[in-house]
Length: 363
Image (cartoon, rainbow, N blue to C red; front, side, top):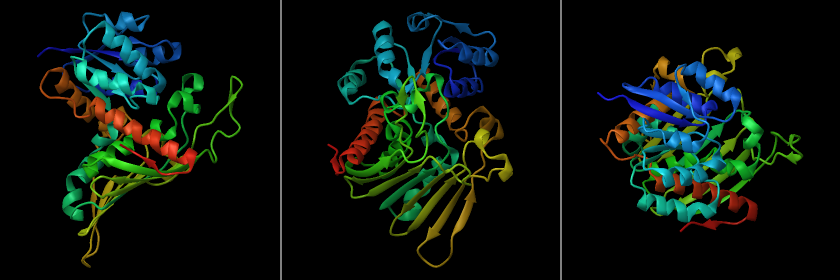
């Protein structure tokens, strides 16, 4: 079987996670990397000693040995790099979320969706977390049809990034785009519908208040609520706090319907787990039927090798399994350009709602 050669654009924390998971795939290798930061290059070299480093994006894309590209650069660079790549050649691409940070990118994204000859997969790792895939498989049967969906994330603050780009809305797209497009993607996936309006409230409350970078004060939000109505009548809510490190479970997803309630509890990333709390708990589902039989608990174990390869409960590996099949021509992308853009639009609309203090309609 042919060995697939991957090109990596960007090797920060998430880039390293992609590399480690590609290395777990059969007949796949990281062939070439473009990363301008010396520290990140050294970290990538430690993971892939024989990798080739390219001095520019153009040089990376023009490498004839490449079978696909993985874009893991800072958020605000994704669209400009997609423009450069797609102007040079047609090649399968996995691009990290968020797809875009600028509402003006919509025309380019629609053109890309319609006219680019090779497949593009937008990285939405949360879809592939084992506890969440089980939740999605069970949710309609347990609830009898979801009426209300609530996603709560209580987590640690934003990590340090090269040049501190994630401390500013103008580079990250804003917290509800940067961090929460995962959750808006899950809302669309679970409701099987599209949002019609959003009412939100968010701000910078605790984190980074006194931080300045090159004379500019950090303005990234760390707390928010966002409530969406969907075309099929379902209602969803996101609750975010980024100053709740030490929580036993970082994510809690609950779905309620006429038949009962299904909950999913996911602990925080293994490498950020507070050691004084002992071993992290197993992810779990809790089924609560309306009849008085009491709740039942299902623990969802994650392969320790996959936990060691990344911070998303094994999901990056399962995502890459699907992308590998795309590169081999065995399937279409499961998370399309349209999916990536719609999740970003939901985040942008929620931020607009908060800033303007009014409900924002979504076409």
